[in-house]
Amino acid sequence: MSNLRSLLWLAVGAAVGVAGWLLVAPLVLSSRWQVAGESPQVVGDSIDPFAYAGGELVRPVGGSALVRITGSKGTVRLSIESSDPSPPLSMRDGSVVGRKWELHSSIDRSSEVWFDTSVNGNTGLGERRLPETVALLAGEGRFDLTVDRSRQLTGISGFWAIANALRQEDGSIRQRGLVFSPLLRDKTGFSDPDRLELTLLLYEDEPGGNVLFQVVFSDVVIERSPEPS
Image (cartoon, rainbow, N blue to C red):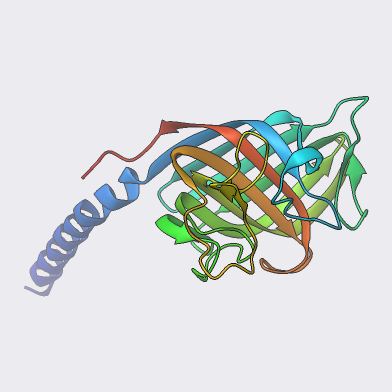
């Protein structure tokens, strides 16, 4: 009799487990993203890290980006290159200089990732010194950097976002002629809902601190996204 009861409890447990998986599985498997970025631009210098007015401080470089998320796991990979005679890529503090940079960050259950939310400005997410915009995907994490295929750095703090574009064709952030300033009371209205940008900011310590590097990919393609519920 005890063996029979044990078998019955095992059967009940298995049924509950299957039912639970059927409830969870659609949520996990439906979160499948693949987003590609091209046409990168390196933004700012040590004196003007955000280059709101654009110009020479927003310079095109070569490279591509790919963000993949499946369930609670994923990766953010970026490759950028500055060829001669253009200046090499450099951290704002001068600690890293090189021609070809490869950046990688892993996404797991411990990562901070947001979907369909406002970031920057006064939102409390992202970079307070940039205008508020709506992000399709955004996250904070640690990036590993390989420079010229040899030198490696690990654990660089970063914030990334695939969001409504902030940069105009001339590289500036402006609306109706007004160049953005973080001193503005209203930090909204500077983004373009018809275009997406992929932005990565690297920080000396934590997001919101001293900016070491900023790159913006102005051509973004959603190669895969969750099916509408």
